[in-house]
Length: 549
Image (cartoon, rainbow, N blue to C red; front, top):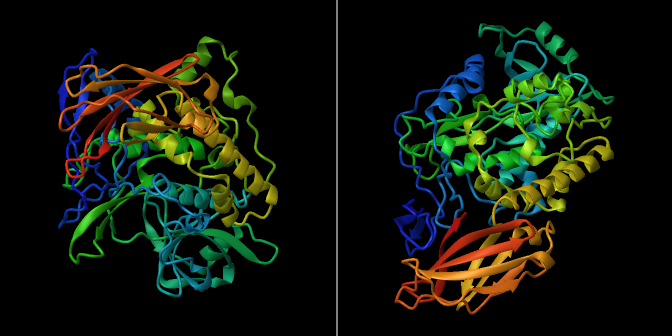
């Protein structure tokens, strides 16, 4: 495991007015060493919904504005502007091939409880709109069992597992979630079964309670019910992570959460999946024991509860604003008031899909206009165009075949629902790429071989732009910022992969050179700085740092 070290070793003046970083001539950090022993379990954070939403919607938004914070780039990135592996994030589809079969399995380790029945019920919340049971299967594995809302068959269970698998492939930690089908007589009460009433009071779970519960679940013609079983996470739960600041009692938690790239960069993937239900109680930190080091503990960070994604929240709550406005959205309210309600609003034409299990999931959405349910989760509000770019370039790696495999794995009964969701995922994916790749210079995967610099133009790689109207200009400077050789201009290739050479390089022993690669298209001109140097061991040229405007 590599130790995270400072990636910029100084800020030196150069020919431009702004400071430009200089990078250490080393390989990029691949893994953050944030698994140092935490011998004492951190305090559990308790989620108070009303206080959390009031603070995020009103109080903290006002006080933070009065503090006049300066915009900051995201932290938690290496010299190549990538997010290393950590207890928060593990690079998967962004750095390697992930087969459709691997995506379908996702985080699975113990496996589906489907074939390990009956299930013993230990706990349930009071009867309400959503039904959730804590059960143990015949192996002794513990799961949280949820069902679709009455009148919305297959919607939440499908959304939950589809989003679970895609977030896992993206790189986030998620629970083991499975679609299950059981007969209600395979649910039996444990001797210690209790129901938690509103207010937190518990009472004994009776057979009459179970009958009432079953009556509120949609039953299939064959007598089975469809549910989603989420395996209880290993370790001791200590509540969700705060959206601002750090956990003071976790010495490994050093980067303020509102500045983490892996949290801010979640905005494009959440917009893609319309995962609107973002709050602290939909995250969970676990104090776990290291499998390879007994009595060695650290904190692992998870996302959970995705059943209201893919337009399900808007459909179930019959509120087409979800995903387009905050629950309390002052700019929208004031704008509507000032214009006497005459301005058309984006959500007014949304309608519930007639397809079974499909929510208000719009294939033709505007990525820049997407909003979660509330503004309370600060990292999403602070996401800048560089965070969007990082998230977009990872989610764009999903192929239609991979998306189809994930959607088909949830077993929707109407093939038209499967086709719609696959098509909508592809459409929204391309819209996010088209948006994010025009906010920055979308050049990636830089390599240098000899004096030839190669890179991918992601706008062209994914067929979202035109090579005929794209040109690149490379200018070289040495470590001090002095020009090295003449500028070189060349045209893009339809494939999106471009190579130029020989490019001018510094002549000192280390060969530290800053290659500014500018992309010009109609109404677009941005540059990316690629820092290269000779490997001290092999003397071969290599990329040691990337700085995006």
